[in-house]
Image (cartoon, rainbow, N blue to C red; front, side, top):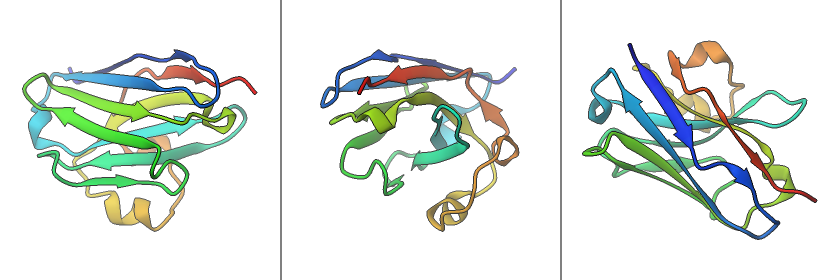
Length: 131
């Protein structure tokens, strides 16, 4: 079975940093694009970052560009999200996700995200930035 397991969340003061990790098992991690998606309290899903299978191409939503960095270690089957300059608006549950479907053009176009857009999801991890 495919499993994605996030870690590294918590409470951090505004301006602080956190690094999320996501370990993928049960599939060929290095063959798959990987994504980070978040859901703030009372809001819908928001795609925030993507990385291609080799890790050489990265993409970000406008809301996190310049503050967050996505990366991956295919030897460790691990996806990362380095989050700097955190703001209260970054408070959300963060998910890693993957799907074989090419999603990046749709995501960069600002289309809404639903659970059906990605085949596999992690359980999610809470990041809280108090105001």
